[in-house]
Image (cartoon, rainbow, N blue to C red):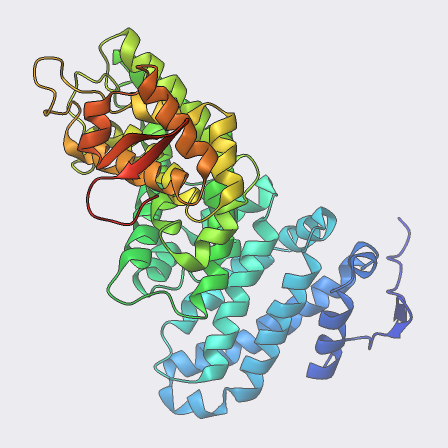
Length: 429
């Protein structure tokens, strides 16, 4: 067998010390790996050297965990650990070859063990927090779109590391790791994660300036997953799938989207997310038809709730679809027009029917009616075309006048024009 080929003295024209012994060499590699061509030509021996430095530096952390008096000597080791993680993190960006090489060196196990050691250090050092974050970023990048790496991260990190990250609020601050691990979670674990996102968004403390970029990354994951998987919810129309966990997890995606679009810092991103509004209208139409055809969880004869235990969450799905449409159309003319083009306005109005025996009693319960009112207002605000459509529907008997009145709207004829106006004392639409 031929002897291993020695590593090149240069990587894309930049000298690489052999062996890598100091912080500056690691920083040089980290900078190099920002470019795709350098990532693709990196020899595996470099990653072995980085791993050796990581292992050596981790010994200082182990010593500090056993002997607190050694904590004050950690500075240089934490700097090396941080740069090792940065280097490996960058090397994994959109490069499956490097992901596989680094994984096959058992670097993931070393990284997870080291991150778990960090929690035992009783220090408030900024350098420790930076090393911790870079370690999580590395785990996220090595697992990104790589099923083998995702499996290895899951084996090493679950449940101990994930529980620690969740309890300390670090997991949601690591969007790369959240995105990579979402695919490996069970549906119940996904629901728990999505509940954590909702709690963070609607919590007493608003999202900070630093939180917004992180949650924009979460928004991309949530919206793309919902667009791709939302029709799974239709399984719930069948009794045999009434408790389908995948469908219930998908419903929670919608709940997160509703809360995200209620946040002005996240709304504008989701208003232009490819296919989201179209898919929501399409799904609303499908469950509306399914509910009218047979008695099932989406039937208008059923009780619609916006909250309750997990088995009843699906019952509020229709109202949340309409809420999301209303949010996406808030002060957005393009989306208002798109809903019109997709025949979404008659669909929304038809979702809020009146009991024939009592025109002032709504079925379903008022929670759905409230979101219909909200959506219609956002669809018609400063949009004469949508206002005209509803006015013409009322004249043609396609929109119930008593329903519009209950919503605080009425149609008034002015010359040759039909005007949709408010009856609640608020300014005209």
